[in-house]
Amino acid sequence: MADTRQRDCGKFNAHTKQELVMIRFRNFCILFTAGLLPVSCMNDLQVSAPELDVKAGSTEVKAGEPVVFEMNGNADYITFWSGETYSDYSHRNGREFTPGVRNKLSFTSEITSGTQGGQLTVLISNGFDGNYMDYDSMIHSDWTDITGWFSLPHGKGRVESSAQDISAFVYPDRPLYLAFRYRCRPQEQHGEASRWVISNLKFTNTSEELGETVLYDLVNSGFRITDPFSRTDAACMSSVSQTQLVMQGRIQSEDVPAAAYETEHWIVSRPIDLTSTRDIGPDRPQVLRGYAESFPTTYSHIYESPGVYEAVFVASNQSIRDCKEAVKSIMITVSE
Image 1 (cartoon, rainbow, N blue to C red):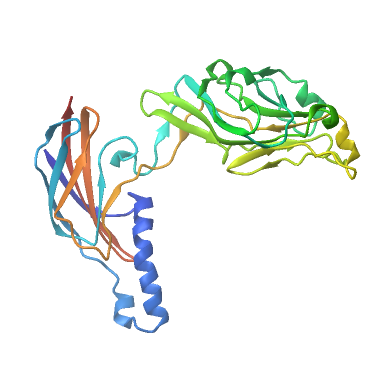
Image 2 (cartoon, rainbow, N blue to C red):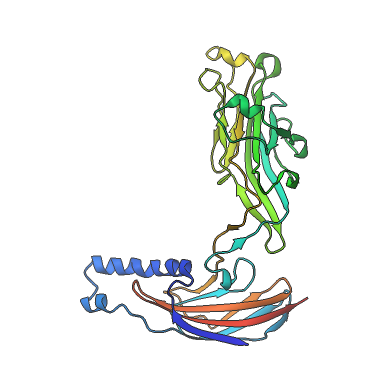
């Protein structure tokens, strides 16, 4: 059963409208700046309604078999929403996500230099109050050592730790904090301080609706360095970026005698909330036709999982002042 709708773009599918109008707006600006755009064009930026007709070769298929759609009409832009997760037309303006009860943590660790072992500890807490400036209070908060849960390198090398379940530390009324503690013992006796790199860090949540979803990574986990030796010549050489955490103690030398003593510093995350409902942003379509491209007469899509899907095709004509759409939907039933 097919459904066809004509309408002005309006507030619907706002993100797609912005993306597609960009090209036309850029071309308009070039012509206007060059004096090549007639005044009549500036006063008449209305667009005609697009035309679109779509038929499916079959509306009932098995998982893994292609569905072939035949199209004809007249439109500047065409997008396709399969109806699958993250490409669902009904979530074009945003998707509200309610986390499930299973939460995992994973990361990759690497030692790139140095010889001192046993320097890194992985800690998790629900009791830390978020006061990063009070070092003594922070380190004496209720931290649980989970280092043994993860595979870590012993000497130079890189290890990708498997995801570990941290659900026992997740509560609706209390955020959790993740910390990496780096302890450097006297280097004359214990070897040169090692340089640790943490990357690919992910907090994931598994829900019935979306499966496994990344809720936090190094971009939004807000890690920060807390170093009680920051005002001394034994200050750490660590750094934080959106791609990696680097942990390293000051290398002992004649110019840095303080590095001969034991030092310690932490890299601690922002409060991590794995229970609240949140908007994870709009689903996205597949662009089948851009403004400068030819009109597609066929399109094939494969559904990998059984279910009933609403396949939606959106045709649009747009200018910087006007936008009109034609929406065509077809229900597809996929069996095992």
